[in-house]
Figure 1 (cartoon, rainbow, N blue to C red):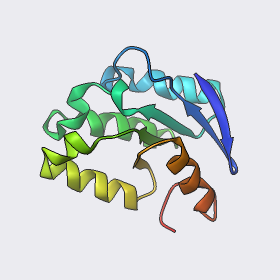
Figure 2 (figure 1 turned 135 degrees about the horizontal axis):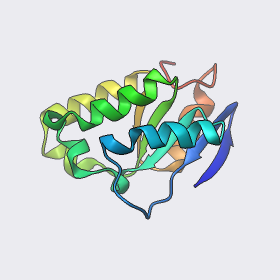
Figure 3 (figure 1 turned 45 degrees about the horizontal axis):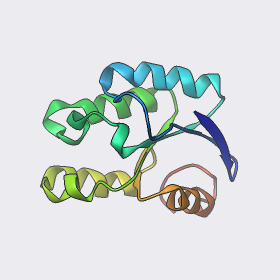
Figure 4 (figure 1 turned 60 degrees about the horizontal axis):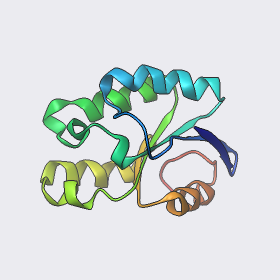
Length: 127
């Protein structure tokens, strides 16, 4: 794991390689973020348990809610077009999440940086 400072935010960047992250690991993400004094947790899309992308499993909601409860922001980094293309519900979730304050889906680290820099307060959210 590494921490990048983008704007006024400390972003915990999880590595692309490692075990799958599911609902059971949400508490670990919170602990890691707090340990690194980060307010944003960037998770590579390929690290997420496949159930994250099946909204009926509620894994995405559980992970997002756990982080939000602890005032952390979740950013899924990477290509999710295949998953979005096969689920209208997921497509809607991604679209609405990207309009909100707490969960974002971005293509790459550059897009993450741009979105954080573009926010006037440095907090993910509506411009």
